[in-house]
Image 1 (cartoon, helix red, strand yellow):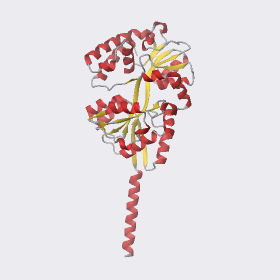
Image 2 (spheres, one colour):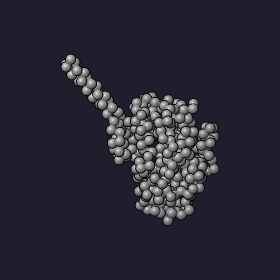
Image 3 (cartoon, helix red, strand yellow):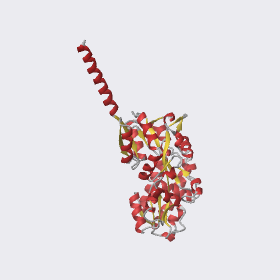
Length: 359
């Protein structure tokens, strides 16, 4: 009997040990943007949830879709595509699964951003994404040298010849289209109409090449151009402008008169993810007020939570307040869902501009 009791005890210990090891090996595999998983938050999360290890792969919209498409939605447990990149990718490739909103404290989320993302990512009544952080693309100007700079078209104004910059990506196509009086997002429904708009935009941007000192490719490149005084204005991500503002308060983000182009990066579950519970824990964790400030300090973006602007670190809050009025916020232009074929059309337009400008 003693032998039998001992064996039972040994088996019990082994079962407990195996269960503990299995629990300790839970891995949350994040597919996200650079700066969206700062070490400080990962360490804090893992301390709170010692049974979860966070593994991070930094990416961008195009790469996220490509990685998940290649695996049928496997390899990651939580992805962070922008709100306009979910609907079409899901319809074409079936790489995501619906979210269980009961697992998320959506009460802390900004209603306008939550409803906006839900509207963009609901398929057959199922919601596939919720918002995380948001920001805009627009203009940046040194107000001591270009005090009246406020239109996309100002990038090509002869008075700034050789003193502006832009990035040859889809944002400059869209901004230029808006400056010409078009609504490119409305034209997505008619690809022939959208192609006509792109053709006109290409002509404008090729003619603009004498104004462009350099075509920037990354935020550091652009920051160096602005801070050195080589350029006085540029198309930009708002986060880059906010960072520069701390070094030179004359350089501010300028929401274009037609409205800053607004993106929302989301939380989205890959279809074959294996750690949904850990993913929901991470979502709720990073949306806590004290963690929002850490995240925004890393990314430069504003959390899509109630009072997100007030939760920014002090330096970034000052930069945002210097850039946006309430009217500018009301005039935001949210990126529309990208239908199949649009990115190919835009890619060809950009190649024509690059070929003609050396950009």
